[in-house]
Amino acid sequence: MPDRTKLALLAAAMTAALTVAAAVVSVSYALAVDGRPATTHIPGTTDAAPGIAWTLDAPTLLDHKYAAFRNPTVPTHFDSGEAGFTDFGDVFVTMAGLPNHRSGNFDRATMIGVDAEDGSVLWRADAGSIGGCSERPAAGKFVCYSSSFEDDQMFVTFDLNDGEVTRTPTEWDIFGLDTFEDRVYTIEGNVEDNDVRVHAGTVDDPDAYWSKAFDIGAGWEEIAFGKTITTKNGAGLIDLGRAAAGFELESGTQTWTAGYPDCSEDVTFAGDLLQRVRRDCDDYSVKGVDLLDPSGEVVISTQQRFTQSLEEAEPTDDSVPIIVGDSGFDRRTGEKLWTSSLLVSDPDGDNPNGTAFAMFGDVVLVRDPQNQSVSGIDARTGNRLWTQEVRSSDGYAFDGRNVVAFDDLLRATDIRTGEQAWEIPVDAMVESDRDSPRILRETDQSLIYATNATLISLR
Image: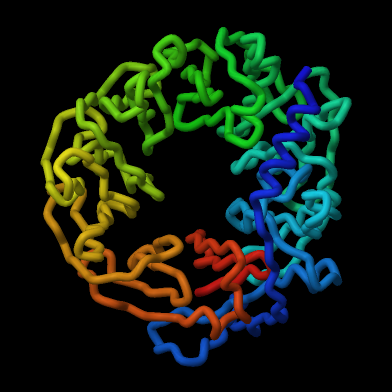
């Protein structure tokens, strides 16, 4: 069993570092036209800019001026301060509640099902004490597990259609789960004793397909707030901080492992491949990068002393090269296709850093910190498509044609030409949200601008 005293101290330390503010705005809905909601023009914008399809307000939903939205996949036993929602196509799920600055908890945590088309609330359900949830559904359910602070853990599911909650007790000590194609993958055990097991099953029978033991471990403090299991395109990744392992989704067969005594590797998904960063055991500097296929075979390997951190690394298809170091590689064969000096910044000559920060379709965005500019690079050829001077931004999203940067403005730039498409002042949509965490995400329905207090659909 996990040491709950340790976990409580970790949660308190994390909470003390977070500051949470909630802006209060009003709810508004556009009128329906031909069965599809119309949009409301935003003052001060051109006709090319999207309008507001709907807004959803947390204070109004909970009838409390300090109510806030939170990412529904994170634990509820402390307040993450992370605004957000999960996109399930026709339905969005968000979590609303009350930040408690004294206890550090997120009180009255409530799961909310939202119609993605018109913003109407489809259902709401008591979240209870949640330890984490998957970002993908399984069998029409939003799949979660209860907090390890609870004496008896449970699987918790929310029906996406009506919000019906099912709580199923389990003897497992769960510390992570993920879903893929209606299968549920659960990781449990005692990481401090290298007693880790992964189970594959269904919502109703979580070990129906297989159960496998993995001889890896870590300290509870290393996994308390991170994502410990990720599944994608036939491959599974266990990430315990100091140790990691890969496995096949179909059989559970372990494909590779990394960790002590190597003390040198970070592993994440990079599109359809797994990226393994090799580090020096003394100073933890980067020694190189390997790209592995789902079976664990190394497809690409470099010796360069820097990495790229892409916010969006999903290509439109597997013919789009993957960016590793200063080059573009064929992700299927590992062949190096091109090299560009735009992908590395090293003004001092001995401290190289990757400059790529986002990839949308087949265009890579890179920063030039010396010239304070952003460029778009064709991922297929390595050619620069455009360059523009920019100020810093809180993040980027993609609406299918334009890359949209945001801070106090939403600024859309044509991804292929670099021409400005439109701008939207944030204060024309909401009251001041300067101190609130903000995200901008593209969905099948629209762009969603989210703060602690508000979800806004732009279309």
